[in-house]
Structures are given as structure tokens and as C-alpha cells.
Length: 220
Image 1 (cartoon, rainbow, N blue to C red):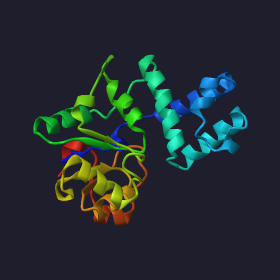
Image 2 (image 1 turned 90 degrees about the horizontal axis):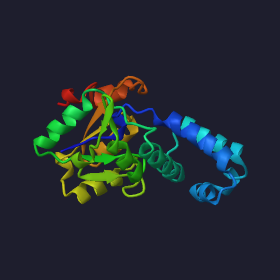
Image 3 (image 1 turned 30 degrees about the vertical axis):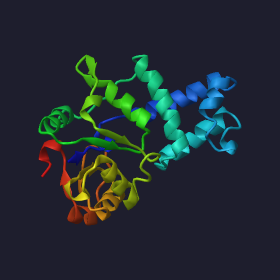
Image 4 (image 1 turned 90 degrees about the vertical axis):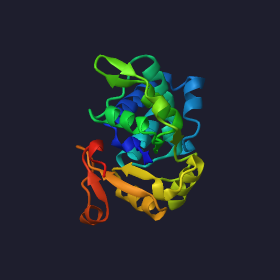
């Protein structure tokens, strides 16, 4: 049962989100609706727009998966997608492979540091030529760090397998993150590293320990 990770998607939304947060913070700082959006941020980061944006940039540069930032991103994405300003670009092999796996009766699920809300938006507006497609029906489950736990913890993968009703020995997890791969493997999940353009270089240890693919069609 392949479990496709959002890390495999060719998405560049982080820069868009940073831009949106900066513009929104400066234009709407006094609005009650905006203050409600950022209420989950630490108080010291909500002193003024520049402090908030600096905190977001710091989290992003260090790849910190703060729950409150992901929730804010989800809200921004919801607006951007519904307004037609955002579309989800995927590598050219992704849609056909996901559809093929689904047609063969395999269960597909997403485990991402992005919120479940963001995942649903992400796959509702997948770019295909000049239009978009809704691919949500391909997936049986959506999991994030709130519903499943940290992506770096063995227990998170065990929980997902249990909720999907699958023994870990029949689950395959795709990721571009070595630490996630280690955690999933510890839970008994077969793990494959996806080495896409723009990903962080894989260590020699990871290349020895895990199967590595460049396209989903190469899945062993």
C-alpha cells in the first residue's frame, strides 16, 4: 500500500506564503480577523508586522514545522486557491502513477507537516495544462503532525497504519527526508527515498540504507 508523501510534489508555495503573510500582516495588522489568524503564534512574535514576518522567515529557513505556522498557511492557501491565485504543480509522472496505483486497488494516504486543511486544498486544484483537477478522491486518508504526531517519531507511523487498518509490513512510505525514513522504518514500514530536483543531497548512509527513486514509476 503506497503512502504518497506531499514531499514528493513539486510545489513552491512556501515563497508565496511568505509573501502573502508579509503583505497581509502589513495591510491588516489592526483587523480582528487577522489577529485571530495569528493568535496561535508566541506572544513575543506578535508585537508588530515586522516581528511576525521575521519569525515566519526564521521558521521557514530552519524548516521548523510549527503547528501554528502550518495552520496559518492552510488559511492563506484556502483563500489563494479559492480565488484562483494558486494552483498545485506536480511532477509530470505523479498523476498517472497515483491513478494507476488507485486503479490496482491500493490505498493511498498522505502524511505531511502541512495541515490536513492545506492538503485538501493542495489536491483540490492540481494544475493540468491550462485547467486544474481535483485529486482528493484518490486518497483514503490525510494525516498531519496534529492528527498523527511528529514525522520523526516511530509512533506516528504506527498510528497511521492502525487507522488505515494496515499492517506496517504491507505499507510503503515515500519521502525525501532521511530522518522521516528512519522513523518510518523503525515502525516496520518499507520506506523509499524520492530524490527530486531541488531536494537536499542524500547522505552516503541513506543511499546505502534505503531504496532511492527519481520517479514514481521506478518504485520497486
